[in-house]
Length: 110
Figure 1 (cartoon, rainbow, N blue to C red):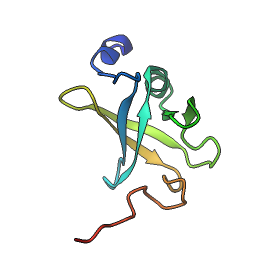
Figure 2: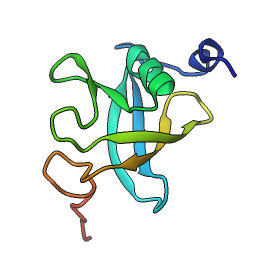
Figure 3: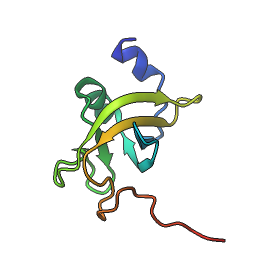
């Protein structure tokens, strides 16, 4: 499938963003959730280096550009509605900015 046809399957929200779940390609562990705009998605798909849209900085960023904890794209999935993406990635170092392996380390007991 060509890039343009693939991008047409993605439903971006009113802000031009789509939520993305990053999952470790070998272990299946959920690493993080972030956002992509069209440029981040195109750059990720063409380079295999995962890029996101930083809502706080309002800028494109390559995961790991400051920490060295890069993500390399292994597999790419679009959900049934086209409004959420799943990236299976090779994660170098921790995924979370806190230094934790995953952003989902706060288990809630009830």
